[in-house]
Length: 125
Image (cartoon, one colour):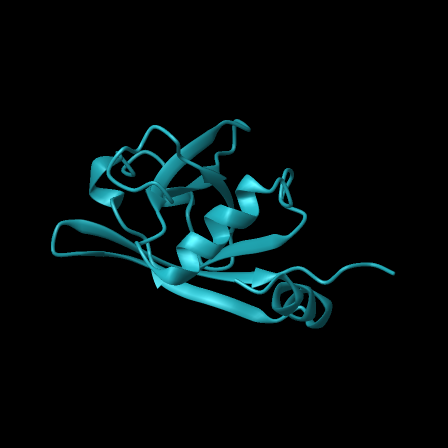
């Protein structure tokens, strides 16, 4: 991964990655489903407990009671590995680097499906 490419993306506030959440079946979304809607902000954090994927990145939703709930993970891909590496470097401690939001959500075939978009935040000069 070329760090200068990330700096270029960040300076331009560019779209970075779009995907459907993986592993959302593992989490009970029924209690927060009524609160989730397109455009809602999500948060990314490393999931070091996940032994099946060394680059696991969990996606969190901030509930109305200010508690964070894991709603899924980024699917295994080169992009999610890049995001995991950036999180490991400490570049996104409080959501300063990535902006993650819900693009679309639906309940289909007795399963919750959430499509998300991740972009690089523009730096303030």
